[in-house]
Image (cartoon, rainbow, N blue to C red):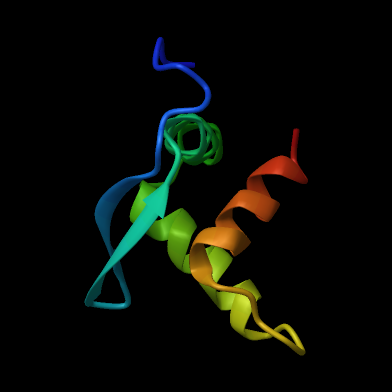
Length: 77
């Protein structure tokens, strides 16, 4: 994990999902968790975000992408 304080405000980064760029705002701790999860699964962050997005939009009431990423990460701790 990073040395950034846990209550640091969200950081916006661009990711590419199926050829489309989008911005996601996540707290640094979640960016760290996402980076670790992608490395563990042997995929790029963009590929993992695309997979989470695909699962998210299949939901009956899809949450926002940033929320879906946070829930996906926390559910795997």
